Length: 191
Image 1 (cartoon, helix red, strand yellow):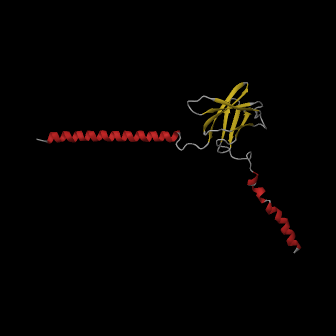
Image 2: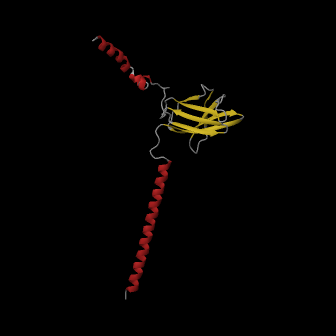
Image 3: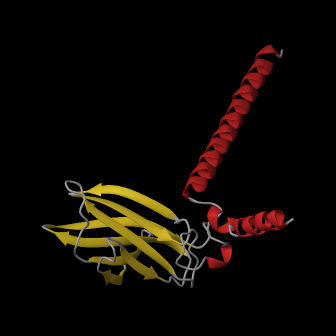
């Protein structure tokens, strides 16, 4: 009986800690936890590989978010040691307004920039840094829900309307030609 009790108490703590083995419990997740980014872009510009991420996965108006940028040299893999300036532009044809978000120094090889947007919309985030030559990288950022009909939907809708109107125009033209032929035949055959 004592042996059975000892085995029971030895196995009890192992089963109670199992949720920590599988992953972090949900109550420990916070704003800065490892949530997936809304996008992750990797690009090569000049002598650097640049990786850019925006958090949270679905940024909303009036809620804080952050941008992470990694810049590593292609030749030796060392991180860019200077500062990166983040700016924001409206992503539309009629606006060229540019606002400064901030200038950040590296924090463990990551340039982190917080943001809060008051309006839904499409924005362009510009990251600028200088190393022998200027580097400028633009990234799109969507705040809020995307519109139900985007540019692709508008284009498809416009093509459908054009095809229907051409079809109707051709059908009316054919009807007029057939009516003209029928009228000409009736006049030719009548005494």
